[in-house]
Image (cartoon, rainbow, N blue to C red):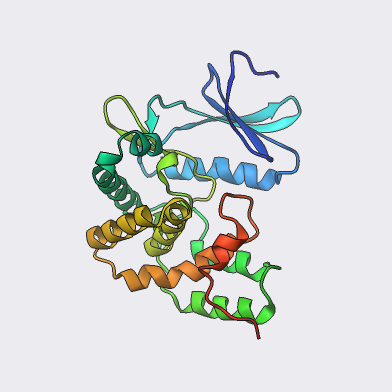
Length: 250
């Protein structure tokens, strides 16, 4: 099958994302694990069951010999774009963003993978850190509480679509898990800090105030979450992540 009336909106080394008449079509390169593609589709279906406002999964199929996921298209602007276009409204938009995150984290999706187990696997397989550093991070992770809240894994304003009626839709559930809300907040904080530390601090202040969470507790998650991102393909480069990993080489 070939795409008709399509418009490329995102291009990565492992995928291309198109807007089509069918909806949003993500086409993955053969280098991307087949299991990860089907896990993303399964995550989406499991989050659908929470009744959170997300684009629904429509189909998983092959296009030109490549696996593809098709989801609903939600018209609107990203919250990231709105924040950039209206910097005077940053704090209001950030407040809405945090409220949406807290609403999401109240949901339960018991069939999702465990965030704590996922972090442990990712840290255990790192080659960028030595065995002593990995062991220290795993010991810290083991000491953190195990919760079962819905965690997005990449919750940032570019993954929030604001529809014309103001309703917000959360997209891109590839990294969804069930786990500790503060770990998910730590990941969001890192994504903001990559772009602008002031914005990251505004986010953390709002998240901790609205969730009644101590900042120190979210910060305890930062080295763990940063380490788990070290060898992934994303915007969080190694040099940036290493700033947050406070373990020393023996």
